[in-house]
Every structure is written in structure tokens, then in C-alpha cells.
Length: 285
Ligand SMILES: Cc1cc2nc3c(=O)[nH]c(=O)nc-3n(C[C@H](O)[C@H](O)[C@H](O)COP(=O)(O)OP(=O)(O)OC[C@H]3O[C@@H](n4cnc5c(N)ncnc54)[C@H](O)[C@@H]3O)c2cc1C
Image 1 (spheres, rainbow, N blue to C red):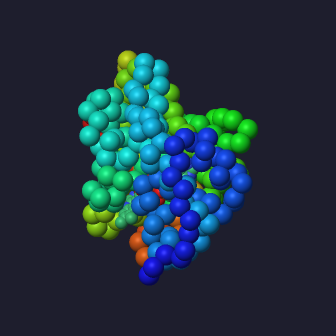
Image 2: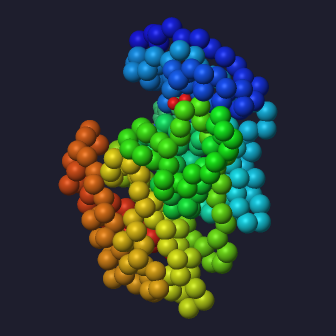
Image 3: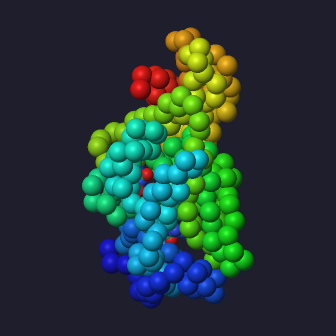
């Protein structure tokens, strides 16, 4: 289908984008276009203007600093996939990127666009929840920081307010022996997740789990942190019984819907299987 008629503005700063979005609530940011364009072509949205931020300078950065990682609004999925430093410190991050769609999608799509789109089956949210990221939004009254746990408010809906854009995503670095993994169950390469689980574990000197964070996607109306599963791991040695118990708890915390990717019962059971795999994969690194 052809998209409906819309206006097009190419901005040279995020402030300019905010001004337009604030004065016209039917205007929409255009980043990689990998979610927006299909919606336009299906005529599921009819924006007045597309506000193209692709020419805003200095927005494609992935800055790995001593205590945090700062990610600009135009960092594309592919940039994470090929980042050797991320593979060595937090492999779950590039591992997530490499499982999104296909190369064309990964060359254009952005992490910020994926978060703003808030598809309940998107991959990035699980991993950013596991890494306890925060989102810096720029709006008419300046900047504010939104913890990722408060960012998703439901399917395709976020805490971004009128005129607000995502400027940056920040991941605070965790000191010590940190292990991470993202495991995605998909029906075929390039598909959205049936279920996706991201795990970040911090191990103590005696091999016990000092801290754990688990983000799950495609298993509820919005991605979530499996807090009961985390509690089942923290302070324990990761024996098979402990991992089994945590995975069982993650399954109980999930609430997937039945759709073309499987029944809710099947997906719930897969949350258990994939959580177990993600924990074991992280530990094996
Ligand atoms: C064939 C195909 C397969 C895919 N497979 C997967 C998959 O397996 N897993 C997965 O997670 N995703 C998948 N996607 C989606 C893809 O990851 C998109 O890149 C991503 O969802 C949106 O990023 P974008 O930069 O393309 O955003 P756009 O499409 O440009 O925008 C998406 C939405 O976010 C808003 N937006 C964008 N940037 C900002 C910003 N900085 N501030 C505020 N709002 C903003 C836009 O206004 C729009 O509402 C797939 C897409 C396609 C076409």
C-alpha cells in the first residue's frame, strides 16, 4: 500500500525537533524508519509531518566510559553488533543487536527508535532492562531522566510526554565479575521473538551470585524485569537446582498472549526454558 500524504521536515538539532513536535502533536520523529515506514505503508498511522533527525550531527555515538556507557539517539543496531569492546565487557548488548531483523534493518534501525516504538516483542528492551539503563529525554522544559523500569507503559506506549524525544540511553557500568547473555527464541531468522530473555549476573569471589538482573520480552503487555527470579539467584551458588528455581519463577512472572508465534501456555513454558539457557550462557562466558 502507498502511505498517506504527510509533510517532511529535516531538522539540524534535537531542540528543533522538540519545537515542532510540541507545536504539532500529529508530527512524528523519523529515525531509521524501520518501524515507522511499515506503519505508514499499512496506513496504521497518519502523521502530519515526519521530523527527520538523521542529519542531526553527533548523535550516532556509543561512548564506553569508565563508569557508564552513553548511547546517542542515532546509534544503529549494526554499530553494537560490530563493537569489539562491548563484546568483551557486556556481550549481551551486541548479541541482542545481531538478532534483530536482517542486515538491512540493522543498518538503519536505532536503539532509541526501538525503545520509542515500544513493541512488546522488541529485543532491546529486555537487554536494557537487564542492564538497568536509563533514558534521557529532551522536551520543551529541558532534559529528564527516565529509568527503564518506568519507561514502558503498555504495548506501543511509553512515558515520553508531548514534544519529548529520546536524546540518549545510559547504562551504568557494574564493577566486578559481570556475565551477561541475551537468548532469543524465534520461529525463523529475522523474526520477532517468541520469547527473549536477557541476563546480567555479578559473581562474587566464591562463585556465588552477588547481583542478578533479568529482562524479558514478548511475554507480557510490556517487557519486564523478573524480580522474583532475580531474588532466587542472589546470594546463592548457581547450581542447576537454583537456576531451575529462578527459571520457574520467571515463568510465573510472565503473562504472554496467544498469537501467530504460539499459544500463551507454550510461550510461558518457553520463558522457563529460555531463562535457563540465558543464565547458563552468561555463566559459561
Ligand atoms: C523486517 C523487519 C524486521 C524487524 N525485526 C525486528 C526484530 O527481530 N526485533 C526487534 O526488536 N525489532 C525488529 N524490527 C524493528 C526495528 O528494530 C526498528 O529499527 C526499530 O523498532 C525502530 O527503530 P528506527 O530507528 O527504525 O525507528 P523509526 O521507525 O524511525 O521510528 C519508530 C518510532 O519511534 C519514534 N522515534 C524514533 N526515534 C525517536 C527518538 N529519538 N525520540 C522519540 N521518538 C523516536 C518514531 O517517531 C516512531 O514512532 C524489525 C523491523 C523490520 C522492518
